[in-house]
Length: 56
Image (cartoon, rainbow, N blue to C red; front, top):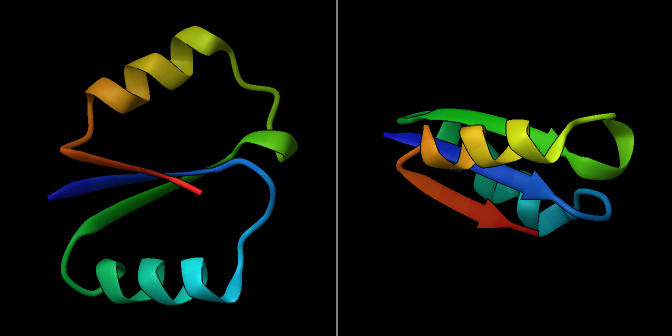
């Protein structure tokens, strides 16, 4: 499964633990929105190219 994590502020201890656990069995991508100059279109493309999206 492909999982996308969108980090709105910054990673928390809980988010890190969950991402680490999921990374063991799934392909995980993390986009930290405040730290990246990323276009809206790119975010939408990423959302639709993953099976599951988690927003923190």
